[in-house]
Image (tube, rainbow, N blue to C red; front, side):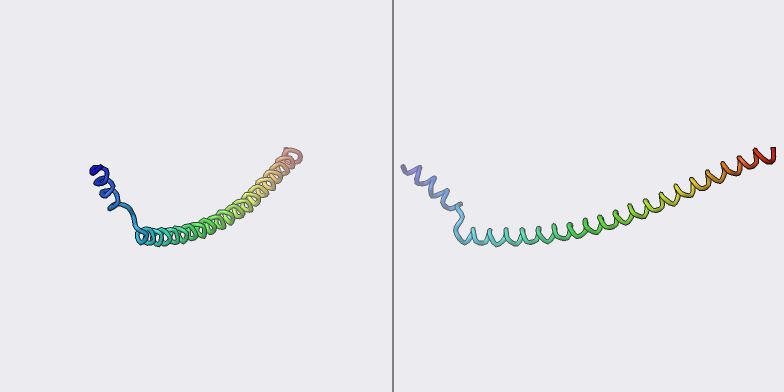
Length: 90
């Protein structure tokens, strides 16, 4: 019986008190607030990156259509010139 009481007394000294729990709760709230701010900052950064990627996509798409239109016009012109040369010069 004395051994059991000794073990319980040893364990009781390691148990947390209400004040310890309150301090832990305050610390956890601070940590959570800090994490929420960091997540908010990351969200803002990702939104900025998304806007940049959207702008790049629109620019590349517009440039692609300009290049494609130029290639089609040039190809049509070359076929016309070749036909004219074959028909009238040769």
